[in-house]
Image 1 (cartoon, rainbow, N blue to C red):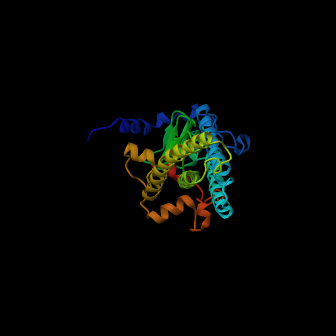
Image 2 (image 1 turned 60 degrees about the horizontal axis):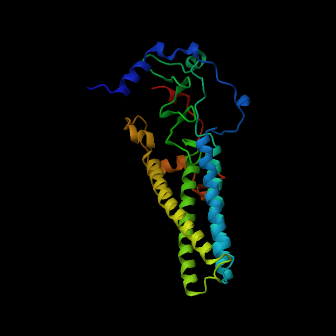
Length: 299
């Protein structure tokens, strides 16, 4: 059988001297670290700020250009309430996805004491990440931006300035879903508003001048169409990844499946929580994913 570079790396990791626990500094306590998770990455912070600004721009155009000048009070109230509710849920999901620990493995836990606590039996193997000096659980991968190993890491997303992993995948999925919904809603309203302005006097269908109104609507249409396509694709790939219980990195690297196969419904509940309820759609409900199994470090 041909030995790939991945296999050669694994063979090196199987050697006891590779772990070198004496070179690892014990990880700081949770109290010393605090509970706040935030990645200090300039590109990610800029992308996150741009995301919020684009949502606020869409809300500005929807409210002040299309709904407030409308003569149909019921139409304005219903669509304004629906759009702002979806926008609020999208930003709340983004906030949770950005500030939730995605499943970081304790940094520097490859110490002699921790390895001994695993009570390894003959033939059992643990893997160490040479970059963050951590004993890697099964299905964990190192992120060069977060500079940590992340449990069930799917990918690092600059738009949420965080990795998408075991603990925050729900919020990322909700974020893509709500952005896709407000994008679709905005496109529909732009279409109706253009028809309304063509039938009526352009000076009466908006509080702004006709050229300004057209420019604002075209920019919103372009933004909504772009993000509708992008987030719909991301939402679909994330749901497929959850149902198949295979992360994006695992699919890309075509890693051998070493974990138990479960039904699609069980995989969905593992990400969104038990049991099925309206809380699945709420970015404020934290899914109950249980405690980490210490023996998942062992292969």
